[in-house]
Image 1 (cartoon, rainbow, N blue to C red):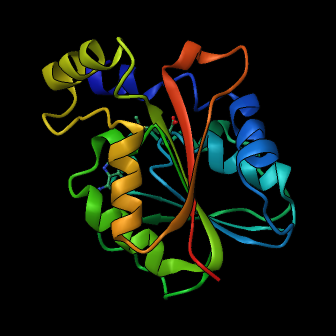
Image 2 (image 1 turned 135 degrees about the horizontal axis):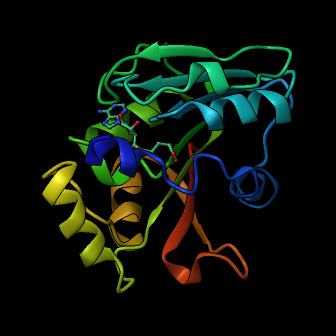
Length: 198
Ligand SMILES: C[S@@+](CC[C@H](N)C(=O)[O-])C[C@H]1O[C@@H](n2cnc3c(N)ncnc32)[C@H](O)[C@@H]1O
């Protein structure tokens, strides 16, 4: 098993409680909403979302499906659409999604500003962008980057909340909020949300 595969097994991917936190506290979604997850990785999160939101249209996107665990996934009644594409060019029409989620994906994207602009483009007015990732202010951020640079990607950067806020505002998103999961993660994971104005 190579280093990339080991690191693809982030604790987030199988943690339904992390996604429950996103859906219960950070976001408010219409039950029949259209939700895009960028960087679905193994696919557990997309499968979980399809069970938790049985009427929703879940679209999962990744640049590669080399870590995908198709045989282990348990879907809700409406199976997600799995797309292969790179996030700076989302193959979706403008103003078509109620939410765009990136969980432990933003730190490894090649063109972060373009990805946020694309997310803002595909969000409906009032739709929400959620980014959950390593907090660049936490002590663990630098070791996390060093290890990622050694074996995963030289691009990895643990963003600070201020950097993400600036990127979202430059893309026209507003109402930036930051959440911390109580009793979990010790502040190393930040859960940020910004909205496309109505
Ligand atoms: C650390 S994994 C996180 C996967 C999953 N969200 C989780 O929490 O377990 C980051 C994912 O982002 C994907 N990714 C990296 N660059 C991407 C890009 N340009 N477009 C779409 N996905 C990308 C990777 O292939 C990988 O599956």
